[in-house]
Image (cartoon, rainbow, N blue to C red):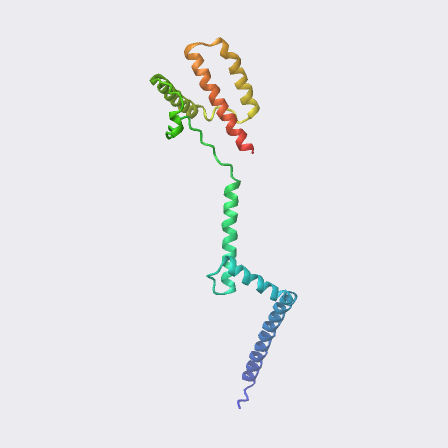
Length: 189
């Protein structure tokens, strides 16, 4: 056995350092164990709930950690869906003529009214003008329902004094105001 004093001190210091490191690890393990002790009583119930969750939401999971991961993924997906549903959905207004309805057997019983080609042309022209005006005025119309109602009332009062093209323009503007009022009232629901 070597008797070198420095070697003995070095060995003794290394041994004490090892003992201190082991004591620290033991203290940390005891702290973790103490933190888990209050939960030990609830552990059987927790495991049972995780098994139920596995059957219901994560049947393909191999271990409990995969069950928890699947549940977390499901919660995140549902939160995204909820957030997407909270955002107001933009109402798209279309002023196109509705598609013709399918012919029904009862149509034969109704009296046939001759269709006028000019009515279709007028309606198509009206919807095209509505769409162009809507695109042009989209940002200019107020977003306050009360202001829109006041504008509509003013336009209605002015209708009696208008004729021809000015009357058609006022009718289109009234229709646009009505569409915006409808859009804003739906957004409030």
